[in-house]
Image 1: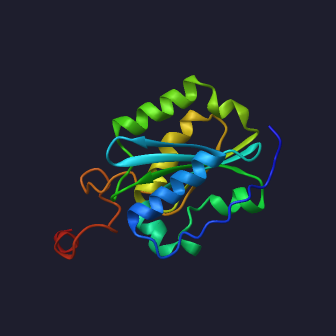
Image 2 (image 1 turned 45 degrees about the vertical axis):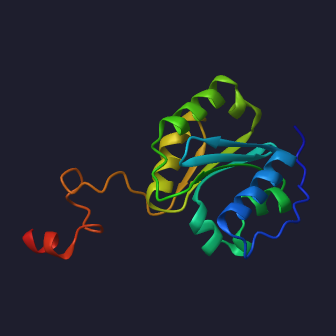
Image 3 (image 1 turned 90 degrees about the vertical axis):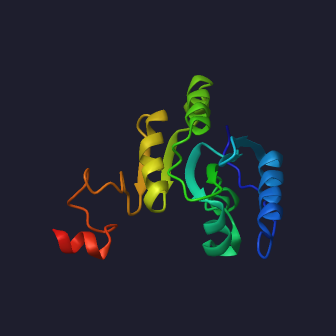
Length: 173
């Protein structure tokens, strides 16, 4: 696989959710693949080079917060020649879903990750960071960038982490 920058010249701004997803689907189909993973998730892949960025993102958050409403890895594929696998959720999710588990199992069985020299799993907080760390086992030796990671919101399991406890719960301690 040769590194090559992808010519992605698509405007993702100011689109409704369905139109945005349809454009992501089109770009991924042109340069790799796009796959629905049950009702809550989907995956898109851009094949560009020997380095792979795997991201976990919420569709609404991407549309509202990312530069140009573009999935995080598209810029890396366009400018740096990185391949990009993005897992999207349609609602707040920790990507704990049988369809997502099955997808990664299939990718491992197919040797998908073996084609890359460098792999980075990225999650930008909460459930996405959890997913980046959890699914990185699919590519031994991968780097994980987990921003503000969480493993649970259950205070019984992580009583030392007060970030998600209510004010009343904190007063009881």
